[in-house]
Length: 273
Image (cartoon, rainbow, N blue to C red; front, top):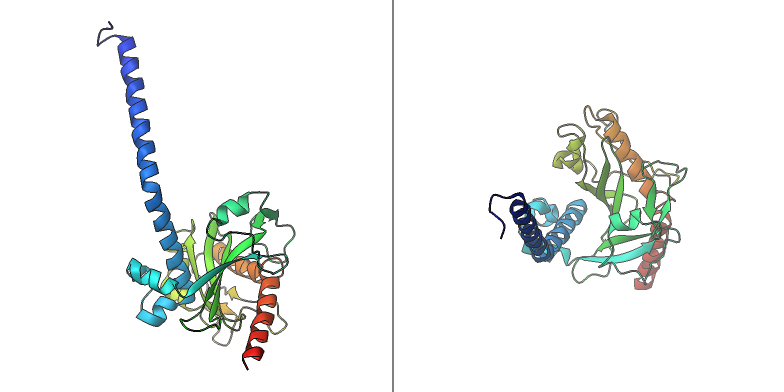
């Protein structure tokens, strides 16, 4: 029998303690995972509602200030579909419930390389298929808004967010970023509700159909329908937001889908008429 103060006893006790702690941590992680997944889903819903401006329109506040049940209630207006970016058509074989952006963009089997884009988002790859969100008011079949996941490099890392378009598919409803590494008080002002509010009504495309929305260098001229105010001291972040918004609006990303959707909506209006 080993003495309590012997080296062997100390090592054995340490090993047992490590095993017990590892089992406890693993058990806690397994037990908490459903809660974490539920919170992640709720946060996604909140950000989609924020970009679409639904909470502001209905309750006069951002979705983050609403009770979880209110968020779930408003999200009942939203439907999800998977879209093949190259063809612009729906991918009925992809499951929106299991699709995750970061997994899809990093996996060579589900993504493509971004090479020589017209507007450089600063990323190496993009998913072949993306999940998009449609907003329809209860009792209506008409699409009120379309919310598109977007991402691209800022100063310190990737900004992940959502861009919401009005029913004309060429005017921005709102934008929100749910994850980024930008400097608080500078590039981090992409989270500022006052700055985000400027995006409502900005034209995404110019008269020739080219992506034109941008973050201006300094205060945006009042007659510039394509621009929002720049963020003071955050030139690289502003340039990154401009590039990522234009990239995702272009032919390398959601362009084919938005063209296809516009045609579908026109046909639907004609058949209803």
